[in-house]
Image (cartoon, rainbow, N blue to C red):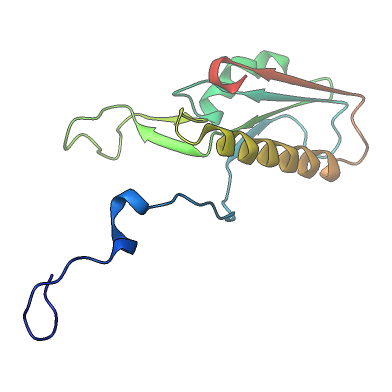
Length: 145
């Protein structure tokens, strides 16, 4: 790097990688979820949390036989998505996409964010019901546990 007069000078210590610090800031993010059943008046609510590589709407297919009798099934979706294929040029419109709840990178922060997300979704669903459901069931699969 050169000064105004063209003479070289060393980079500022503040920008050296060895002094970099990782910090956090909370941001708002829109989360996607899918439902089966009656949102307005459920007697029973199931929160079903998918595993690694799945998406909420596809995960719900496994629960269609449980719908009815006042049962609402809610599938929150992981906030991180990725393409299944990692080769260059394979990210076409029909490329497979999966979700992941977290990796080992910054895991504790991810867990705290997901707890806040699931708590908020719970209060949103239960608060929108005409009456408090008699029963709430939580089922986690694989990484969703």
